[in-house]
Amino acid sequence: MDQQDDNPESGKAPNAFEVALSVIAAALGVQSSKNRERDFTHGNPIVFILAGFVFTVLFVLTIVGVVYLVL
Image (cartoon, rainbow, N blue to C red; front, side):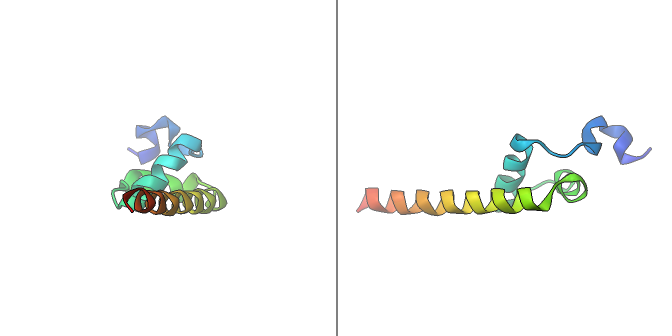
């Protein structure tokens, strides 16, 4: 049986929530191969690049904010 037959939504592009979860999971190193394959086959690279950039900026700002709170 083909993998697409197991999941009827596998042919759809990931929505905004799925993109956010994929970016966070990839940043933490816990991305599942099923989601990674979905992202690479059906996802728009520009969306993932922008989401990764936004995540990185928010992460750095959070770290800077925590450092300022501690000092």
